[in-house]
Length: 151
Image 1 (tube, rainbow, N blue to C red):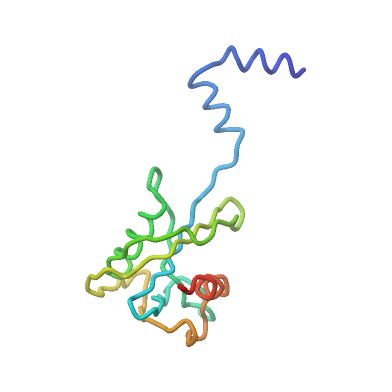
Image 2 (spheres, helix red, strand yellow; image 1 turned 30 degrees about the vertical axis):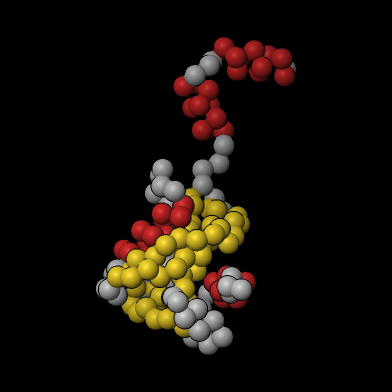
């Protein structure tokens, strides 16, 4: 059976092979999170409108657009949600997420801009010391903040 499959695979070269691979493999959404810090070492947290009421605070996060480089996802998401500019830094974490989702986190440094919230998604944005986070921060984000303290 393996020989037959191997021969068939060689015969269908090109775009048809890619279509077979596409149908045979899982599709993923890529969630990208930014651990954004200012020069004082404070972390940017956003109060998200669409998150559960008991844990509305979290880091800037969003989904990568097809073909987008993941560090640029954080630059785009922070700009869209807050109006602030950031410079992406090192990769902090890559994990499998819920169902067909991959979670990627980068550190980022605040580089300027004027705070202007996207009122549809974001209710509030504030800078917090990593040792004085508000109630209702998503636990996975607390872990990212605590594990990514600059040395």
